[in-house]
Image 1 (cartoon, rainbow, N blue to C red):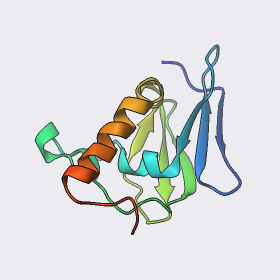
Image 2: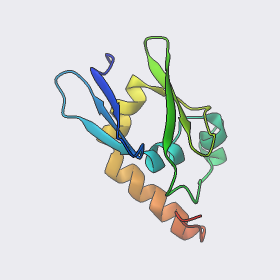
Image 3: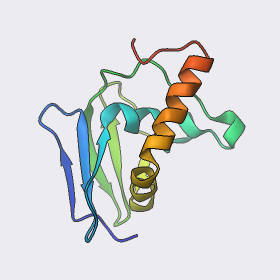
Image 4: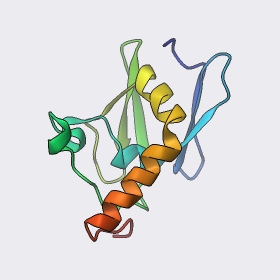
Length: 117
């Protein structure tokens, strides 16, 4: 996947818009990016090690730094900063956004967890 033509964080720091050339923009809430972070801390090293992260409804994006020509590192207001968001991951997440978000909500409910703190 080629690099996005634009990465834009909203003024309230709660939304990231990612635009790839020739595609409609993808909009991601900071909460979604935080709970679906590609970091080992969240994803583990295998599917059974993946962590369901609760209580991030108020998280914001505090910083974004380029990682080579293939990704950005996002720092969130809860200080999580170990996820490397590749262009491929943004593209995949954009196309699977609804299903992944619903899966996250279902996991929260099944584990008795909440999006609230």
